[in-house]
Image 1 (cartoon, rainbow, N blue to C red):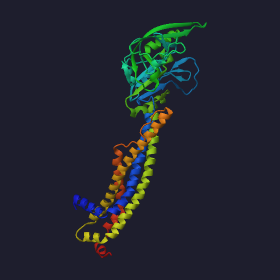
Image 2: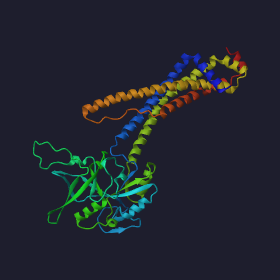
Image 3: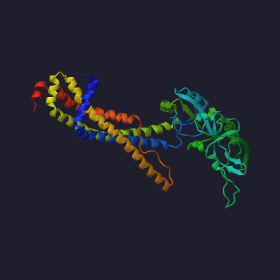
Image 4: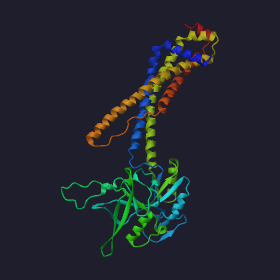
Length: 443
């Protein structure tokens, strides 16, 4: 029997029993719709959760800090050099220039950027305004290596220049502001020169100040992370200011850096890079660990949701098996007649399996459409509720409640067809194995 003749015959047989086929397909519709809605809900919750992870924009980034060796303790004492390159401050594995070389040798590492904080007390002055900020020295000439979005200016750092986060202008205030006066608007610092006032104290408590002119060459866009409240300068500038603060030179081989920013080549190798850095005796952290944990949780949740919907499909499968069994009993003489005129067991098996799969396809298609519409209704209801909560509570509006990816409807339809095939397998085998003579005599 040709394929298209088989398809035509299956459609004719299903059309002769519209009511029974429709009632049987309803179970598949309910099960498929439940799978689509619940899995879409799980995907929507996952997307909403990951989108709320403020400050996590670069999943190839790894933060590395000095680690504790096996001896433990953090006492300050004589520094020795170990064979791996990291200085050890009586229990501390320091981040030294040799450590940079060691980490760069790890497969998958793209760059290692040393970072150091400003130790001296500092204040920013712009005209009559004063402000404060965290000052960070970075060992890179172009801040584009950090993958921060740029609001204006450039990411290239030169001597006595700085790139500021989006919140820095809001930190400026007028120290001479009188009661009742309106506070000044945040200044536009891009391209402007500000005075960095460094301060330190002598042993007898006298304050010493040093003024440094710094040009703001770039302003970063808001990331809702560390970058928003940070002033980035060259590492050489920050080192020189720290040396002035304490009055001695800094030996990086003996004292190390505050931390490293390690850029991995791809998100797929980040966790492996973290494991290798931790094995070297340092403390490494990446946002990818947190995101992976969240994704694992929601993947499990999607499986549970999908399993709940699959229970409805199991019930529908029993209905399909019952319908096909009753169909065989009613069409026993028809089966015998088909075999008498030359139909093979394979032809009969294909017809009944095709009818069972057809019921699964009709139910899967209808359930997919209803499931998608249900997800859209859920989104509208959730958006209206969240908007009401945001308006009354001043909170932020959340994301979508349900997300239906393109693969889900296709998967749901294929799964429903497979359920139909498996449900109709036993009745179809029973029909294919009927003896023609016995089938023709059946009343």
